[in-house]
Image 1 (cartoon, rainbow, N blue to C red):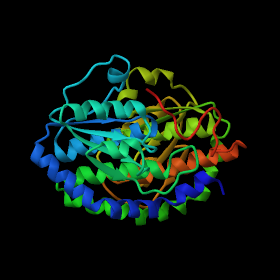
Image 2: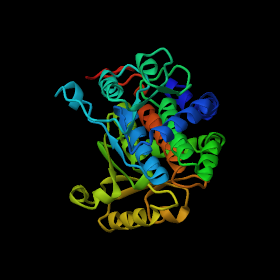
Image 3: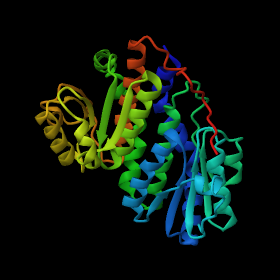
Image 4: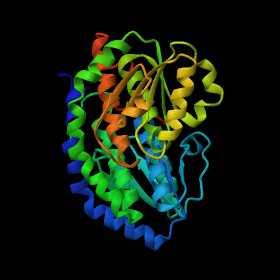
Length: 345
């Protein structure tokens, strides 16, 4: 078994440890933000952490009603400018806690009195120590280069905090059930391996989703890029209707992340439009009718709102990336040209 697959399978226990460790931190952070009367949130991250941050943007905006922007760290590190973040919650997200450009955003925030939060998998990191509050992934050491368990831990911390701050008991309850539900996805291994065999000779792949699952399209494409070297690209289905649709013709490989819920109508319409031009379509869904007419499908038997289906969809995507890599005779644990910690400024 590869390290990547082993770490995918650890995610159920990781999410439980993640929630248990951070219960007090959620309460203290929420109290501080209420006292501060923040008007917005700014979040700085790179790579997979950036995709987890986009998940937070959707969750926090829809649950708490406050705008979230994704920082451009180059404003601080390239242009040496400082932003007025005094009324903001500023979060730095990094698995290693070593991202220099993310720390530059946090330093800017601290200088003007913002509430700062770091989210890392390293309690001893500089980032963990510099912020006002730290949320700990508590995922154990991640050995594979491709982030899996640390990504879902970041998502969980960000999504659960959004629900906690917004005092949304239903979303919190749903999120606490995700860990146990993940076990059901691991039973899909044979079906995912079968799709991986069909995808191993692809040169390119387009991944589409909508709403809170949009960052999962981005993360799916990233995992496939780094472990299989397939030119995978993730889009929001709403954006893909515009210019990008012109690249689709007969047999263009398309992967649709289309769970039941708020975005299903839009994804159904996109699937039909792709079928009309003869694209080769695979669908990841928890509703069989959303896969009707597709060439391939991975159907999982788990219900839930848009706040939890991203976890199910990304675990399937992680498994798919891992098994495509193995089907190609590659090692998903050590992608070429990459290392576990990448520091950018």
